[in-house]
Amino acid sequence: MASTKRAKKPRRDDAPVARNMAPNPSWYVPVMLGLMILGLLWIVTFYLSAGAYPVRSWANWNLGAGFGLIIAGFLMTTNWR
Image (cartoon, rainbow, N blue to C red; front, top):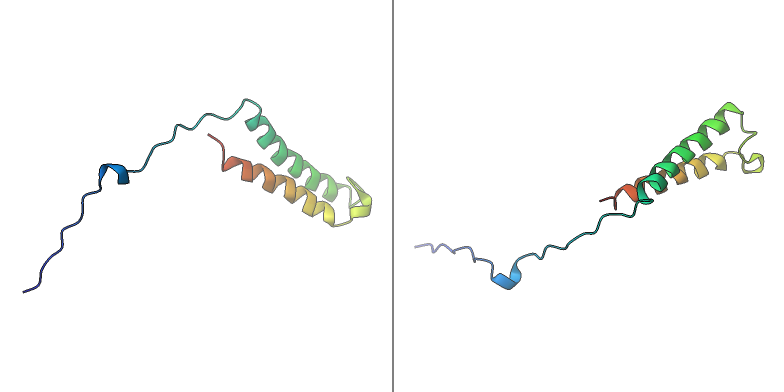
């Protein structure tokens, strides 16, 4: 005869503890959106100026700078409450 195991009921101290998450400061969302928009404008400026602007000596690294700004903005969205 096969025995069946009963599922253990979680004890009171095993229950997950809810943390009270404070809202973000008022500057958080404007900085987050500003980084993403600035990155987009950086890339658009680079393409429209045929590589002359924003920083001519960086050449194609301007794309990395623009995408870096966009990624920084998106990383901020993960902590947005």
